[in-house]
Image (tube, rainbow over all chains, first blue to last red; front, side, top):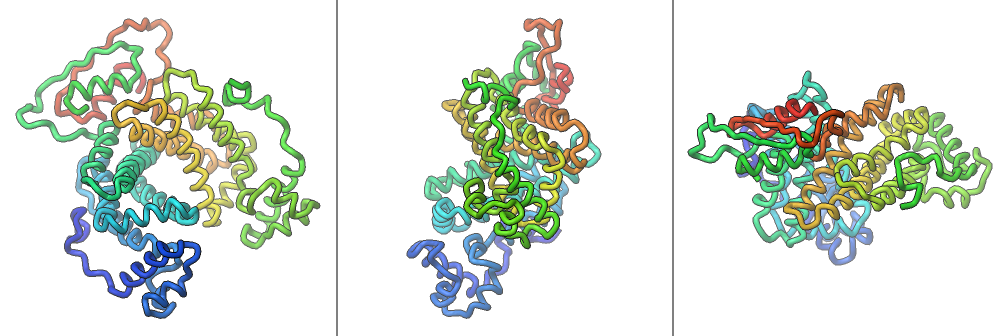
Length: 239
Length: 239
């Protein structure tokens, strides 16, 4: 397990190249001043004071400069999942999803700017959907491996991966809509806790409760399962 | 409630215009013969024997002719959800998702051809992601309305909508990979049953069991919730 993939933190990461950062800064200044569609790669390199070839060394297209950190984050996620020694695969994919949040939370002002830009440019919206899809496939691929041989393993993997991504994105968007104020991690942890309650192990048992403690739930046979689960959550103190 | 939105069936639907069908048939013949990228709208209208304006009357772009029925299906889904009188919102969104399956199952050979085409053309893959996103938002929007005022209502809505779409698409793809053989509805119902077990009411109570029947589940307090739910499903005969 390499040190960079051991944990969601990335304090040990090498510095990003300054030219790459300069291109991102120049691009966003122009996108905000003129609009995304009205800005060309030539405009960006002129403002950054570099040549076109330098731009394309870092970014395959103009769209990629809007999301400069997703490739790194996808690689981090893949490495994090590959280094799995966790008994609870649902907790593992929730922790992997938190890597995306941490990327956004590294630079709240930039993330909020980009959120507004992405909402207003259909092409960027499509690009973002394809990135989200790649994260979801990374999580589902990991779960499919862990659920291999189980009944409906691939189905369960796909459903849980989609639920994790939806919960993460619900929380991320609410944090971005609040202009990046508030505790992003707390919001995402709360959302992911909802998925873990439905599909995985719940939060750790409160101190002082022995593992032998017993809970009895009595339910009408015809009650919807979600009501029974709600009842259980309340009884178990996980609601 | 209009008759066309009352149920997933659509036997009462008006016939599609023949020119539209001719354009779709011509397009697919050329896509399969020459490849998607190598086929122009001019090629399609020449083969169909109509003018360019006729093409654009039915399809905003070349991509849209690949998915000629999604707009109709989205409209059907929206109408179906708007006509909701169901006590169980999770069942309702599962039934709404089945409309998409029925659209594919109407013409298995065409759906399988398109599945292969979409897998091989990145632009079509992106288009498909944006369509899937619109279905998911329709389902999530309905659930957000139904869960309004509940704790974490929007979060629950987004997570359930994503889970329904993932389960539906897992089943749809396995049916498409089997060349459209087998019972598509059975495969999708099984997948959606998995989501309903996690989030909604289970299958109908078996005949002969009164609603007053009582189930008692005893569980260790430290047990993961999913294990307790599994236990419950077995006890309730929903496993």
